[in-house]
Every structure is written in structure tokens, then in C-alpha cells.
Length: 181
Image 1 (spheres, rainbow, N blue to C red):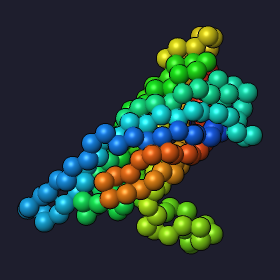
Image 2 (image 1 turned 135 degrees about the horizontal axis):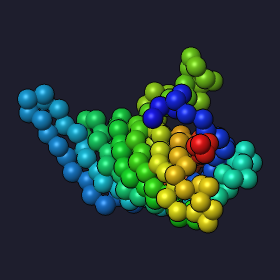
Image 3 (image 1 turned 90 degrees about the vertical axis):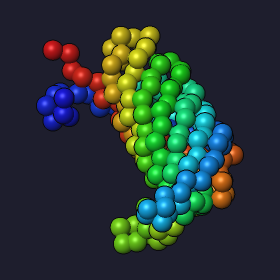
Image 4 (image 1 turned 60 degrees about the vertical axis):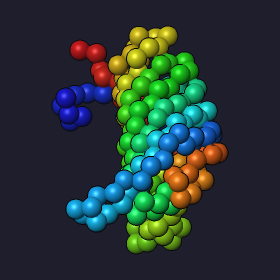
């Protein structure tokens, strides 16, 4: 059901992420017909999730451990070039939530003309995208089935094989709980 077709309560989510991105596998892919080469990587990630000043009281229920897997595809067969990624995640804390994520890697989206010049279009070591999912278990049934929609920005150590190591980031979005009928 589309967002405009229902009544929901929205609680702000504002999180800090501290953890690691671990490279599990990295392999070149070649397409002779299109004369291109891509790098495919498989990563595991884990982050401690903690509230930020902008977090709501209810949003703090989402503090805990976020972990999951990612598949990247990088241009020109190099992990420092533009890439796209997708994966799955689980969050354990006061609630259990799970879902999917997808986004772009090594791109500077916070650039002119929309923003002050803090990034260029090529910005290795940055992943950003959208994380979405649902609360599956909670101490209070009110939150079971609530949706999580949030934008993430993660900084990591980029390299030619796909990068990894220590990582930190932010998660900004909302917890959408349907109004009971």
C-alpha cells in the first residue's frame, strides 16, 4: 500500500554508526560484447547503532547492533571507482528488525550546485543509499510491523579490491507505524 493511502505515525530516527566493513570476496567480471570490466565484491558489515541528538525517544528503541551483507559492482574493475550496492540487514536491540538496502558507492552527492562544495563527484570511501525494512519483534506489540525508512551515509577505507576496515556513518529517517483501524 502506498504511503499516501494510509495514516501513519512518524517517529524521527537519527543514529550514529560505528563499526566495520569486512571484504569477504572480490572478483573481476568481464563483458566482451560491451567491452567492459567490473569488480564484484561481497562484504559483511556490523555497526553499533547509537542515538544522536535529533533521535526521538521511540527512535532510541532502534539502538543496538546492525549487521548484514552487501554486494558491490564497481566500474572499470576497481574498488575505488563508482559503484552500486545492495544487501540485507538485521538490527538487534530493544527490537528485532530486518530489511534491505541499496545505494551508490564512491560518489560525492553533496556537491555544487545543490550544496556547499564539500565533495566532488568522485569521492572514494563513501557509501550512501536507502535502508528499509520492518520491526519483526518488540517488547511492545505496538511496534511490530512498523516500517523503517532511512538514508545512510557511511565512510570506509577504499582500495582497488573493494575496500573495508573500520567504518563510521549516520542513519537518518523515520519509523512509520500504521494507525490502528
